[in-house]
Image (cartoon, rainbow, N blue to C red):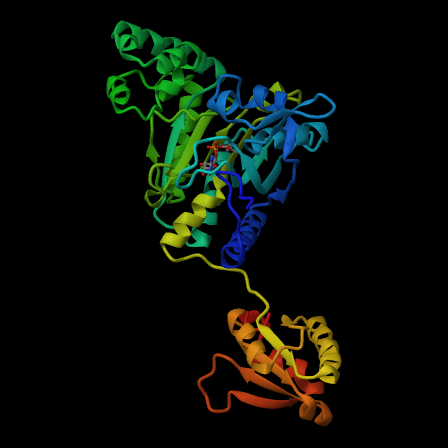
Length: 430
Ligand code: HAM
């Protein structure tokens, strides 16, 4: 038997419907904030990720799915969404001369990581990117939107971690400072070979190492947020104040530097204890240089992405997973003449906005009732020979405890009857 690739997942029925619900929730919340959808391809040039995410990051060095296609181009399956979005807005000239552009996206991303709870090789992100504003209010609005989205889904208890990693130049100076601290305190001698390599290539990443010994060695190291320009420190202070005013709690996490190279100034991560080891629901930050680095005009930007699988874990654990509605009426026709009439009724009811389906394979009433049960239909319509002769249909309420759970309704009155008894806005029939 053929099986799915390790680290991927098939979604069906309840689970897939919960995803649809999540997608709809993100659309309605993000539209409220003026964000508009942008869909970019899953395949992009490998070069794009090398230049944006960074050559010496784990994502580019170890985790990308990359291949050479039939016309010898180096291609990668996107490991994240921001790079493709930035490429698209530059290439299509979508960033206005003045003013901002706010976009959101939803889709699969690919990283060849070791699969575990909350970590897959094909996973999905919901993300948003805000171009054209360097105001800390843009940071605050983006963070607020992310938290509103989670709250609307019913997720409580996430923790917002914040840090300021300054400009690219600040980071270069800080990396030298950190390296000096590590060497002066003999910490370099205690590093594993992989950590040694990091020290040389990307010293900042030592700060968010999960190795408890290294964490302990670095606990008194100089802090990045205190070693960035005064302007950046002042902006960050203002952002913290705005978040406090919005009653958004946060914790300052001086060791959070993020694993992608494009960030500048504000970085953030949202964690949730229900997730276990992979506890980040989502993350983001400012990337004021990336548009220019990829060939566009200098444009400040800020954004985030959340992991859909991780949201689902939290929702399932807190039993708050919701689904979009499904067809919830089922029509049973007994006999060929009834089937022919029933097919027209299906079409009429759907035209009226009602959701309904039918099994066309002339099974028995009992078999059809079993199917209706399995599909959790709340109304079953039965059209037999007698009903057909009299121009009526039996309407059976599957969830009613009343004795009159089955009513006979003239076919011509059926749409009005159903709409009145099972209003669409209550999600009963539609
Ligand atoms: P990231 O931190 O690499 O940031 O990923 C964002 C979120 O994607 C993570 O917090 C996590 O929930 C989810 N995620 C990442 N890898 C996996 C995986 N292997 N399996 C399941 N979920 C995963 C970014 O991707 C940036 N593009 C975010 C951003 C947007 N920054 C600015 N704009």
